[in-house]
Length: 487
Image (cartoon, rainbow, N blue to C red; front, side):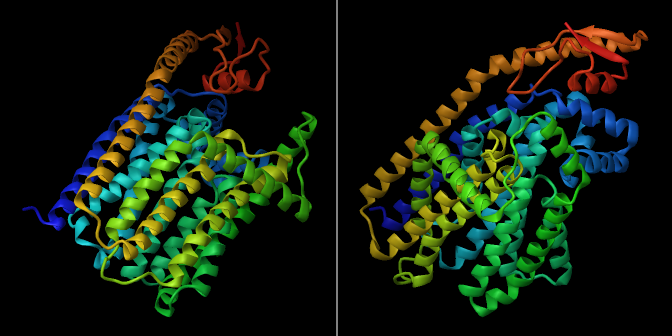
C-alpha cells in the first residue's frame, strides 16, 4: 500500500513538472512573436543621436533636451546600434533574463523555507521556483494592456520592463542576505544597482522609492533584531540610492523642455499640489487595479490556487498554528501593493493629470500578480496548521484541477500569440522591404527620397507626407539621408 507521503510527493512532482511543460509553449510563442520586432518612431531618433554623438554625449543631449531617464536613455541608444538584428533578438533575451532573475529570487525564498518545508516538496524546489517565475512572467505578458510597447518595442521596454528584471535581482539579493550576510561591499553594490534601476522611468523610480521606504518601515516594526541587522543596511542604502536616482531624474533640464513642448501642443497640465496629487493618484490607482483585475480575473484565480497549493505543501504540519505576524503580513501585503500602484500613478498625475499610459501599466500589473501569488501562499501556509492531513483522493483531485487550470491558461495565452502572429509577420515584412529600399537609395547617393509610410502599428507613428514631421526627420538622419517624404 502506498504511504500518504509517497502519494503527496508523487502528485506534487507531477503538478510542478506538468505545469512547467504546459507554460513552456506560450513562453516560446511570446519569444517567437518578438522576432518580428523592428525599429519604430523613437528608435530612429535614438539611433542617429548615438551614432553622431557617441554614448556619453547622447546621454547628455537627451538629459538636457527631453527626459532625465539616465539609464534607459543610454541602453536604448546602445540597443539601436544593433539596428533590426538587435530588435529581433532582444525580446527573447529579455524573457530569458526575466525568468532567470525571478526564478533565482524565488529559489532564494524557498531556500529560506526549506528547513521547515514538508517532505511533500523534497527535491522540487528548483522546478517550483522556475514554475512560479514562468507563471508570473507569462501572466504578465498575457495580461499586459499594450504587449508590444511594454515588451517588444525597445524604446518602451527599456523604461518599463528592464527595471522589473533588476527588481527581481534586488529581491533575490535581499533574500540571500538573510541566509548569507555580505559585507559593506555588498551594500555598496546593492545601492549602485538601486540607483541604476531608478533611472529607467519616472513610474518605476517612484515605485522603487515607495517600496524601499515601506521595507524600512516593515523591518523596523515587524522584523526580529537579527533580521534587521542583516537587511537594514541594504534597505536604507537602497532607499537612499533610489531617492537620489529620482532626484537626478526630476532635476533633468530636459523635463522643462518637454513640458514646454507639451504646453505648446495643448497637452493636459499636471497636478503639483500635494493633496490633489495624492487624491488623483489614489483614484487612478484604484481604476487601474480594477481594470487589470477585471480583464485578468481567471488568471488571478489560477495564481491564487497555485499559491495556496504551494503554501500548503511548503508548510510544516508539525510547527503548530502560525503566529500573529503571518496574519499581519496577509493584511498588509495588499495595502503595500495598492500603495505601489498609487506611487506608479503619481508621475502621470503630476505631469499630465492623467492615469497611467497602457504600456506603463505592466508595472502595477506585475505587483498585483505577485501579491495575489504570495498572499495565496500565506493562506495555504496558515491553512496547513488547521488541516494537518487531507485524504489522498482529495489531494489528487486538487492536483488534477490545478493542472487543468494551468493547461487551460497556457492554451489561452498561446492562442493569443497565434492570433497576433500574422499581423506581426506582415508588419515585419513591410518594414524589411522599406528598409532594403532605403538602404539601396542611400548606397546610390540619393539625398531626398520618398518611402511608403506603414500603417500605424500598436499606437506608434510612422512616416507622413510632410518631410519635417519628427518621425521623418529622425528616420532620414538614421539612414544618413537629407530627407524622407512619405507616400
